[in-house]
Length: 380
Image (cartoon, rainbow, N blue to C red; front, side):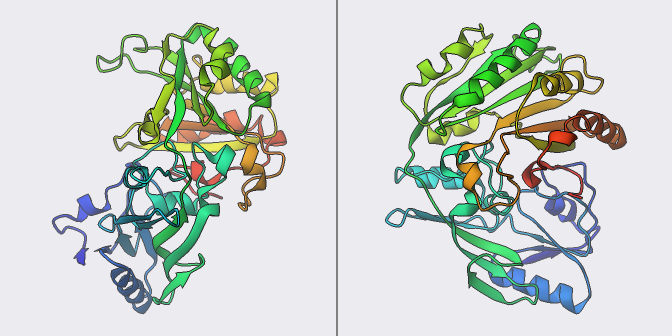
C-alpha cells in the first residue's frame, strides 16, 4: 500500500481520472492493493473523522473527493470459472479485462459500451449494457461480493453497504454478435430519428440499439465524411443471425457509412466507439414511456445541429428484460432514455442551463432518471 498527501510527488497523478472537470483535494490518498488495505484506510478515516471516497477508473466520481480517497486501480485481478460461468473482478478491474478473459471460455459479461469502464462502479450503478434488453442488468447477475463495511471489517456474501473490494458475477454464453453503426449526414437527421423511433416499436429483446446525434469538430484528425458536420449514428447490438434483414429498413435511408457486421464480442467496444481520452463533461438524462413527435422536436431543438450548445444527444431503447429487473430506476412503462452530454469547459453553468431547457419539456411524461448516466453533478 502506498499513500500520498497534497504536494507529494505522484499525488496529482493518483487522483486523476477520466472526468477532468471535478477538482478533488483529499487530505490522504490510499493506493490500495488488497481488501486489507481498503479496510485499514476505512478504519483510519473513522479514527480521524474523515469522509471516504473511492476511485477506480475515475468515471464514477460525481463530486469532489475530500478526506480519504481510496484508489483501487492497482486491484485489477480477473479470474473466470468456466464451469460455473462466473467471473471474479477486483475493485480496479475494467470490462476490457473481463471480456478478454471470458472469451477464452466462450463466455461474455454483461458489459457496457466502453471496455475502459470499471466493473465494480458500473455494476453498482445497475449495469446498463449492450445485451441488457435480453439478459437484464449486470447488477442482477452478482453472485457474491467482498465488501468493506463502514466499520472497517470485511464481509463476503450478498451485496451490502460499504466499499466493494471484489465482485463475483454470472457470465453469458455469447461469443459473437451482429453490431456496429449506420452514420447519416446532417440533412438526414429528422428523417433518420423518426425512422429509428418507428423501427424500435416492435423489436425483439435480442436487439440492443441507440441513436446518437454527434457534432464533430472541423479538425484534421476527424474522418472526412464527418469533419465539421453534425452526424446521426444508429448503433446496433444483435444476437440473431439475420442482422442484414433486421436493419434493411434503416439501410434503405442511405447512410454515409455502414459498419454493421458480425463481430466477436471482444470487439463490442467498436459499436459505440466511446472516446478513450479523459475530458471535462456534464451529462443528465430522462426516461420516457414513448417518443412522440413532440419529444423528437424537443430533442432536435436542444441537441440537434441548430442547438445553441454543442451536445452529444443519445437515445437508448429500453424494454425487454429491463422490465423485469430488480433495479428501482426502471418504472414498468420505461421505454427510452434520452441522454445529453456536453463539454463542461469553459462554463459549467451554461451547460446545466442548456440541459435544463432540453429536459424541462420532457419532464411531464418522464418516469425518472438513470443514475448511471448522470455525469459530473450530484444525483439530487
